[in-house]
Amino acid sequence: MVSIARDLLGKVLVTRRGDVLTSVMITETEAYAGVGDKASHAYGGRRTARTEVMYREGGVCYVFLCYGIHHLFNVTTNRDGVPHAILIRAGEPIDGVETMKGRRGKTNAGPTLTAGPGALSMALGIFTADTGKMLTVGDIWIEDRGIQIDREQIIADTRVGVAYAGDDALLPYRFSIAGNRYVSKAKGLTL
DNA sequence: CAAACGATTTTCT
DNA sequence: GAAAATCGTTTGG
Figure 1 (cartoon, rainbow, N blue to C red):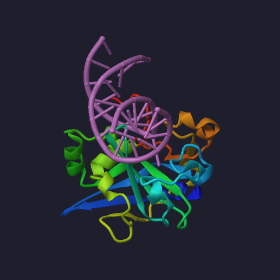
Figure 2 (figure 1 turned 90 degrees about the vertical axis):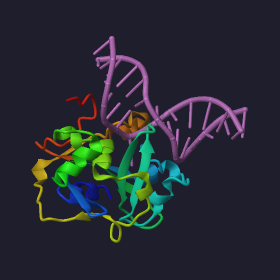
Figure 3 (figure 1 turned 60 degrees about the vertical axis):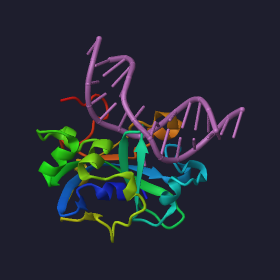
Figure 4 (figure 1 turned 135 degrees about the vertical axis):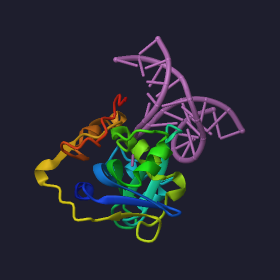
C-alpha cells in the first residue's frame, strides 16, 4: 500500500547499537509497489536471493547495497508473498546526534547528516547485515511519538534515481514533509 | 566463470 | 556542473 509511505512521515526510526541509541524523525519516503512497479527490484515477480526479503510480511527490514558504497534501508509493508516495500530516504536527527556525526565522519551537524538514503543508513549504523530483521524484535524499530503531519504538509512527488523505470518513474510515490530541511535533494548536495 | 550495472554521495574542475 | 568511487547482485557465455 502506497498510503503507508505517507503514514511513515513523522514517525521515528530508532536503532540501537550496543548501548547507543540513535533516532531520526522520518521526513521522506518512497514506495516500491510490488510486481507491477518497474522501479522495484521485485518487478515482474522476480525473486532472487537478494529480493527474497521483499516478499516477506510487513515489518521486515530490507537493506541492500547500491553503487557498492551505500546501504539503503527499506521496510516491507504487505502480506507474506507480496513484495511491497518503502524506502526511507531521509530523516531529521533526534537522538544520538553526536554518534551520527561520528559515523558520518563529520564534525558539524546539518542536513547532509541524514538527508539521503545512503547517508541516513550510515548515520543510524544500518548495514546489509540488518536485512531480514523484524522491526518488532530487533535493535531497529519505528516508534510513533505522536507527531502529526498535516495533509497539506505532505508533498507527493516522483521518485528519485529511477529514470530507467520508464513510465513508472513518473508515479507520485515519493513523499516528503514540506519545509523540512532534512529532505534529500538527490542532486548535488554539497556543504 | 566473467562482465555489467545500480532506489547514491562525494569530490574535483 | 560533471565524473569518480566501489562491490554485491544479476545476467550472459
